[in-house]
Image (cartoon, rainbow, N blue to C red):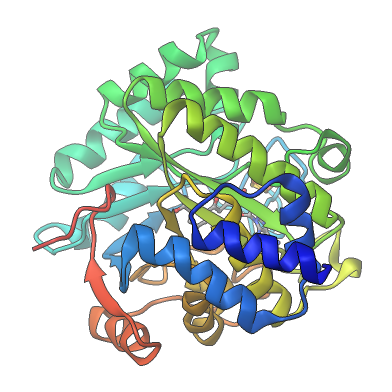
Length: 360
Ligand code: V47
Ligand code: SF4
């Protein structure tokens, strides 16, 4: 980044002006992490002041059997393969029962794309979960799962999302976005939902009143230009709908998958990326430092690079990252622990619900 360019970017950030793709690329080139940290603090302060959000949540992973074959995935198994699981509705309700009468506010339901499970199965699951836990918001199914359900049932995206919404779906998680660039996507996850359809599903969800998240899987074979392209496609959709609540940069974890040879990016690169995402996504209110993937130390540092949300208590209910070699093999934090991590990093912890309303 030239001195002139740096000066211009600092000026734009200070005045809350939108950064161009070229400026985003220059930021990825910036070696001065402290400068990136102080720039990312501008949009962070504007949206969230000194607050860091967390929630009380758990995950439900119905199956790791999946018709797709993403090269970065350590989680997916073929039907009947060692290490595969497919939970029955009763199994899943049994996992929800311990949360009856507790202050948990969200269940996150995401799994593999199982060839024998259709939209009616999942609609019925949503109804049963809602009956058991009426106070708990259901954030469920990546656009990839929605796409498969819709195609299998011969329904449009709108009809599919409406059906699931009528059975209790409250929001969509951000998974399946990976990297939107079509050339990279063909190498990473050739058989799954394309970028255009991922964006169309989220747009449709926003239009029917469902809030959604977005992710970006980074630190594998993509270049900074691919990341910027990804962020700008999200920013453009957000300009049109305003339906994204949070963005989650997901660091590629390299254990036990077909892409392991590329290794993992360093912590400074994770922090640089966090700041660039905060700066480029000037219309998405929340940036999440997802602690089961980052680890607790890097999550705390990420708060100094624009993140304002750390996700939740988790209660050792997700295996996606532990199977890919994350340090957190049994991710679970209590509320006092989450609050202590946030306070130690110099921020004010606030418990939120799925819609970022403070829980009082
Ligand atoms: O789409 C899979 C990623 C995603 C690996 O919305 C991997 O609040 C790194 O979307 N290394 C699913 N990442 C998880 C997800 C998510 C997570 C947390 C919060 C939210 C939210 C959403 O996990 C997939 C893929 O990008 N993933 N394998 C891996 N080896
Ligand atoms: Fe299936 Fe998701 Fe793994 Fe891809 S990342 S193989 S869609 S479980």
